[in-house]
Length: 532
Image (tube, helix red, strand yellow):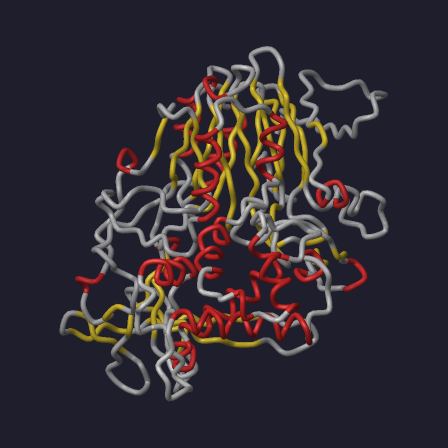
């Protein structure tokens, strides 16, 4: 799950009130993954969204505090190669001794068919997930953090946040959250803004877990977990704001290795740049920021690529595309064609640079260098030997590789491209959970995966929330791509999708008292039987 959250304190707010924003990026489905609600009890009054069937609010606010979450991306799963004593796998080697293998029988129910019986081999490290002979992952045991006992219960975090009144309550609540590690953003009517990485962080050696570990040596085990006061957090930073977008939680001076390598830094870098640049932020500014479709990847890559093209040699058609890209503002707007041209060009370029690794990846697992590494190589080391096509006897240059990729773009644009803008090319949709085509919907939106408005083909901002916490008045807005009903025949099944696609919001009306039954609000009342 990729996501954004940020908050500005009183010194960065146009009203002097803190403002918190959150938009979790998930696979988009109908019915929606989220259910919006306000819950009032004698000791709680909270508004936000939750997963259907889960008590309490997961992301939301009350009259004192608000909070939002993003995935911290810590590496909390390692793989261990097991050495067996015999073909029957009755025991495995550990520190020079044979340890008896445990076997767990699992019965998998299949509708309309006989049960599937699976025998799972268990080791000190965890279950042996892959046993098929010849598999690249054969005899690998998985150690996952949820296998380690914990006295923490994640729902207590949200129960206590729902009732929280200040920073102290927030800290006490989130310390009960065991996994997966999340970035909990926070703001309060006291003017505090904070962010804490929360979750059990294993103590690892440097680079531990990047590759398969030797399961025959116990020295490769985790060395415990960080204490709560050692986990990254910040309260009221001098810059006046906090943020996270799944990027690294710390700089490289942080002493514990956690291998946050699954998410790229484009969103986080741009969010910080924009929040830093503007002195005062309003709720309307925050709405625009959540829908920001500017591409930092295009900003860094495109000028370097255009420099390699001799525009005087281009055909009229190629010249037109070159000029469009040269004048592009780097926004992935739904009605723009330039994002299509750039994506096709950069994808071709990336594949040509790393062609030897891509060819080898069919035989073994190979990590392909990231977009950032490829861009930096072009900008800083254009004479690198990586700029060569292995399928040709010649030794190409960076300029030639960029030109070849541009030629591929021109061919594609002239002969294969059937759409006129980015939204049509992206072909985004929101599918029914059961993949029933008639119960899903196509959507036209701006944005892309590495952009603040991170809407790709099938995933994106599943809930957008903006909350300004005033001492006397709440100013809150939200939107999600779905509706409150899970019934495809209901008018409330997908009633917010058009509003969400257009970049608009509705007001989140926080009610201080139980509304009158005739007020027009949907009210569900529960009465507890205190005698039981």
